[in-house]
Image (tube, rainbow, N blue to C red; front, side, top):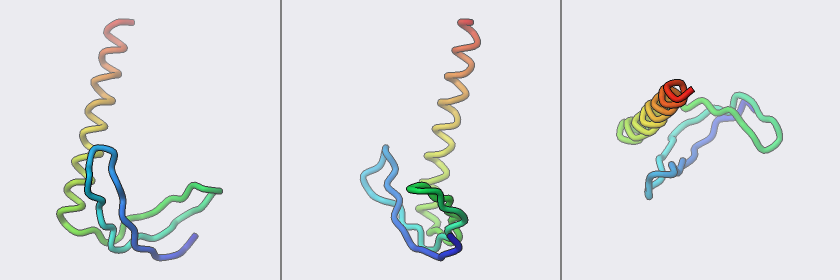
Length: 70
């Protein structure tokens, strides 16, 4: 914890990894870690936000369908 790192993130729907130029490790628990993305290239940032947004929309639609059939 409390280290600065650079990393590449591979999203499941992409073939190219996203460069995270500067990340800060906030916490570590075994093989898990919380990383704050401090500096991300603009294109990579847009891809990351698009991925997260798409997953949120899918989750909301799934919840709405579940409630409609309950």
